[in-house]
Length: 237
Image (cartoon, rainbow, N blue to C red; front, side):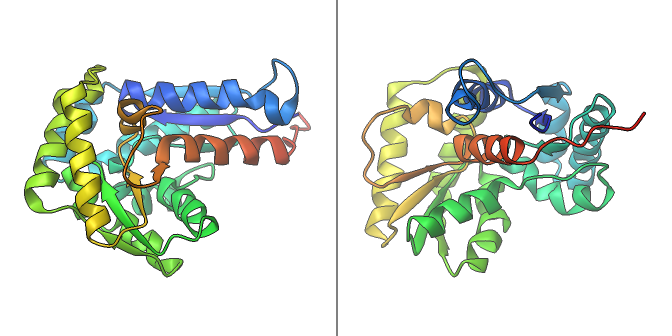
């Protein structure tokens, strides 16, 4: 029996894409109509957003840890969080968590390294892009991270919080993201991280000036592979 995946959800669209990817791609590893057991917990997104805007990463950590505890109590073997920005709190979560975590930036870094990328542009919320979440993870693989300029970071942040998390995916916002990607390409990047879990929905299958590292699906596929490869240990009780 495959391991039980727990999803700590923050925003709905990214979490839904992550869940859907696990379920729809499960049959490729596990046979027709099959996928691992999956459970999800989410607090009201407002709680996360308010704490993030205060730069209160300890409060974000407490929310994430509380979700992980609930998921562990119903049998999850490990947990993932399809929210890049929230990963600023992961160092405070992992030591106290009752079950292991996969880290979204670590999984994206593995994919970037497998693809041979050496200089990667970052997109996502302003808080995420200005943090060390991705530069720190990428540096372990000797991959350089490049941030967009300040105005681009501000505009992308507004697109994410005012549109994408509400399920609004507008052509003008996709065009702006293309402009950001083009500037990152001009800065020498050979790929770009879609570091907001809703950005892959905005991009969909459309052409981009750089190869896109889809953080949502990369995390989902890593969780799926882990769950399918590691048989669940059954309790003696």
